[in-house]
Image 1 (cartoon, rainbow, N blue to C red):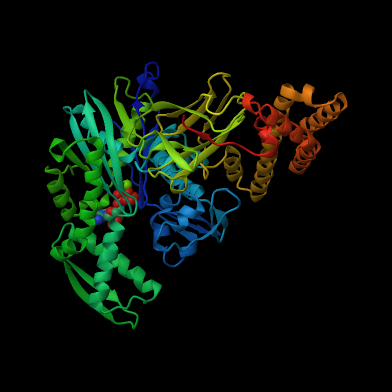
Image 2 (spheres, rainbow, N blue to C red):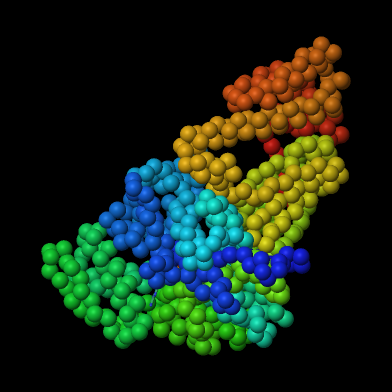
Length: 635
Ligand code: ADP
Ligand code: MG
């Protein structure tokens, strides 16, 4: 997702300093690497001439195997062979469980850390699995290009949220690869076709892969790309075609649904092979080994296949309609439709999509490779290898971003499909008299209730000066950068106090966790847990120290005797001292001790606040000690 200001002024380098960079399509089903060689961007084959690397990773006690060899063993060793890891990356356990389909893996999760897959070699996170795919492609590129890669552009689906983007970056970090930019797959495809060099107009990018469907509407305006809207279905693709064919074969061959795993697997493979044959021929022969050892033979015709998959293809048209509506355009205004993804080789797909958009789809670049090729073109420009190129690409945020407000509702700050990078601000205010802190809860999604949206981050704005409810003016600014990553700032306007968060998604990795991964040590992971606990207690202590200091400043002299004041000051000092400790238990105990010691003070303030209730000065300023935080709501 990017407003890609490629080759910004001063960024370009002299041509002789040519830097080796690549474009990587990290796909659900297949991954590829491409590079600009000579004047042409092309995908790079492995030693055996294969361009597509199946996104399959198998862990054995003898090492990690990636690609075709791993794919062959997927059915024999399903627990240690990870397929479609892209579906898991950047997701929490709850989301993974609700993905549907049977996942053979055993997941483990400690606290809010990244869920891990339990395998023969130990527990491995989806980030590490993706890193293995990246490492393989980097090695391929370095062998082919004859040098170290300086960096790569990695593509991600338009529907990827913040957590998934961050996790993809983390995977690159684990693989030791510098990410020049994350780029939306459809945008990369448009670049591969060089649509930017053509005349102004609106283009649709239709991407049907193995398990996902994406549609994007792009507008080219004086050499500048703008993504007007995006949409799709994250659970629809060529695998579903295979499943329908397999079911049809089962009917024909009289195979029961409860047949053994190996037969089912064999069925899926035969179905997939037949599907691919049918893109070129009108008939595909089938031979299925049955449980009893006998063999079933049959034929699948193109027209039967078309009839089977027709409903699935039509299902992709609803998101197309929605994307057009979001972009505020009609099909008549679409100049071209770019076909992306292996499944767009299916003639019936081309036919129906062409009919829908009322234009002959663009298919001249291999739909499997077009995304990687576009990524390579951009990597080349970002590296400064093409000093004269001034291409701009505008992108949009695929889901609305907002804040939690009173009553568990979501207030959208940046609506979906807003062109990025973007910064938008909104004002919020306090809900209670004297409210000293505001909880900022950042959410992503289209629904109205917090519980229906995805939680991205939470932080607090503390030290709001005492005011009556509704008087504080808290300006919250959301900014999304060129990579689609979010930053949220909150500032109380009268006092200028500020808090901000760079959205580190709930299931992204902390830098220290990545470090631990690199050293590949379970001991390190344990240490990280300790650090995390310590930080949490330090933050809690800080909250109490701040709240108490503020309270003492306010009424410490009027409500406390000199002796009481001395005692509380001493307790406060000892908490400050304890908060520097490296033991989380020590800090926790000190917080508790201070809270107990201050009970009478809190009570006294409460009583005083009753007397001065109208002034707006209440115990809530000290609320951090007893009650955690207050909600905000819109003016
Ligand atoms: P992804 O982007 O999900 O990694 P790809 O773009 O590589 O996926 O597409 C993979 C899908 O394309 C698979 O379902 C595969 O069976 C399908 N596919 C590949 N070649 C053909 C073909 N010749 N005919 C029909 N489907 C194909
Ligand atoms: Mg793809």
